[in-house]
Length: 237
Image (cartoon, rainbow, N blue to C red):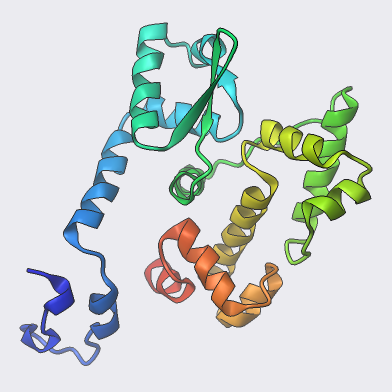
């Protein structure tokens, strides 16, 4: 039965809270089927571990094989499945092929879900002795210290006296995502926490995490989680 044309009055019981809007907006079975396919793909623990690793780095096959303790054929099998699902991407440099997580809402949402499910945290990158690594770590700390602050790549490059392209490339290499995508995800994760643990209004939460427009906040929230903030609050409680 097509839920888009389902008559809510046909429900066998009326408990006084008929989910008219929810049913009207509910995706069709094929959409949920595609979600189920992704979850089925991540039914292998080593594959989830590999995907999580690639959310934080870009690495060649030989190094991934060593890091994961997998043979090259086994690793290639996992990489092929993840790539076919659109969760990771690759690039060739000479004779090496490098893999990293795809810069897509689906991949970002799964990354967040994995970390929230098992209470992992993104690895902190120690400054070390490399000056550029130290500078990128400072950029990261500056950004996450106040998620309500709005910055552009140009303003960050000027503040930290860095080349714009170098900042973008080094940040992605260290944290696995472009600056804008990483900060968007951090903002939405913070918003999710506030929606779960407080009764504050959506507009108030949107402002705290850097969105002056509630509609833009809702759009970003849906891109990451697949739900609107109000839908998320409902299912999270």
